[in-house]
Amino acid sequence: MRYLTDRKRAMGLGSGRSGTEGHWQMLVRSVIMGVLAPLFIFTVGFGIGGSYEEVIAYFSRPFPAIVTGLGLVIGLVQLMAEAQEAIEDYVHGTAGKLLLVANKAFCFALIAASLFALVKLAL
Image (tube, rainbow, N blue to C red; front, side, top):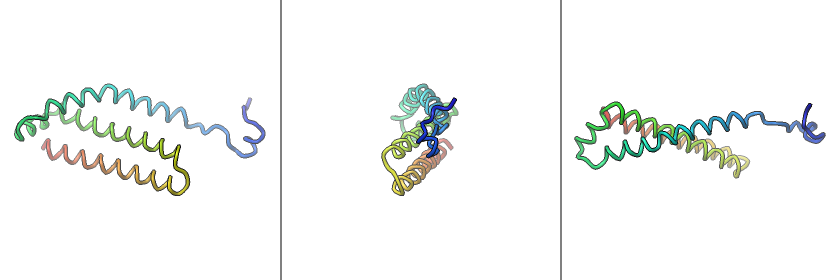
């Protein structure tokens, strides 16, 4: 049994069939960030404030480097997804498409720059 009106059936505007997948992805990222955010804050907080050599030694250890890297990557991917939702909801046409491309480019550039900085710090 289909729950489409005659108008929707004629226009082909039924279910998008992608809402559940997007919802689950957002939910999983949010749960991961809920656990990772305090770890990230405390890990980076303990690493800051020492001398240059102490900070280098701290982030050279595996746990702080991995937690910092995961926090940066997952946080920025979540930022990209949230900004994409806002752009899709409020900006339409060519401007919306350009903003989506700019959003992805900006977030991936931030991910690359932050991981590069972390690698330079850790190695």
